[in-house]
Length: 304
Image 1: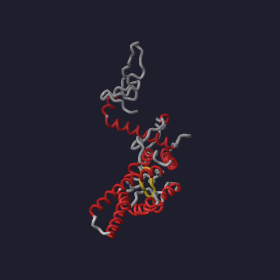
Image 2: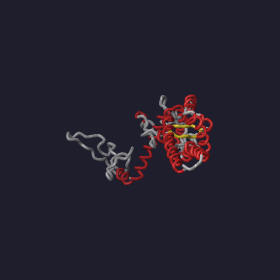
Image 3: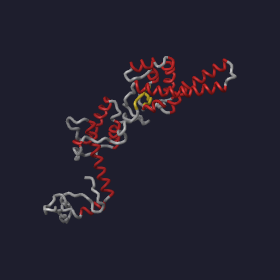
Image 4: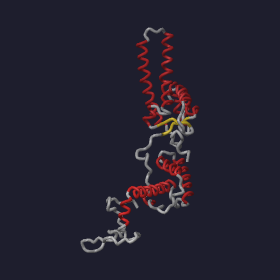
């Protein structure tokens, strides 16, 4: 599923940043830019005390263009949409198609920012963000960009969330051989990022991926089970099988050792010992016939 992650590793369907978080990021950026501009202006005042009025005016204009205007443009271009304020607030500027911005996007946003942020004290930017359905200011509209929430919530990154307990083992007999690797990758990417997605986008992706998995396995999601829970249960089943295969591959001696003592399914196997309690009663499942899977060689219980 190519629309989940672009070639530039930008996740699509992220929630647009709202006005409070954008305002906080902008405030941080303005503090940083104002501090740098003040230091540069102070240095120029000390070093250029002998300049005449015309030269001082030219230096002042150049300093304004380089620091408050050119600085943010350069930072957004080099960081692909992450200024210091946006980095602190977990935001990022992306193109409308989800890709990273280029210099022209940052230039348009910076140029419009002079008018709607600096010259109007942010009034125009606030009004435009409130009117826009996705919280875009005029610079974003003209540049074709969008500020999105990028930060991953703690505990929701990198690991596939477990399925509901009542779905674990539900698909133990499912044939997963027809599911290609690229579809598994798309499902894992969706599950690890589904809490970042816009709810409508997330539902559409889960239904599409669930339909593709059901078409390959021949078993659709049970009635009333959300597509995301179905995908999580199927991925969990594959992980269980992969873990079982990996253990059997890493411990072949344990498999051979246990095969010689199994009373069922092993050729010529003799019944295993039966454990008795202090009252002399037998305890089912204590011996090899009872399903104990502990390896005498390693003491490890293999996954079943």
